[in-house]
Length: 174
Image (cartoon, rainbow, N blue to C red; front, side, top):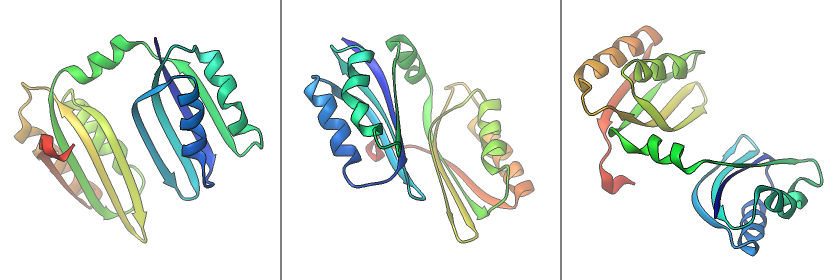
């Protein structure tokens, strides 16, 4: 059974999730991980699907989704080893940022996380009026000094004029 990454992106309409998942189910595909969201009228879907059908068969089964040109669909093989390695080490935290919108917020603050050998595992941003909100799940190495990372985040946030917090992710929040 191969693991495939399926991405669907384009103008939102009712039925995208139903049409996509039904076609995958007809191939015996099992959704192992997924994320889906609506971004200002554009729907984005990323699925990891385990199936006995190969990528070409899945592409054929999903071809109808992009027939009118409003959605794009991509299907590719994903090696299992990379996924397990990405999940393996570290402690999970929630990074929250809010403040006035300006370019560079995501890059600067995720740069602090990367500088601590941390990994961003999920990130969402929203702009509501002039208020910019970022919520990310990050994994920090077990041997990192979390107080130093928090201090570096606060310093960067002060330069950007935003507020930031980094707190442990409780497993029951998942």
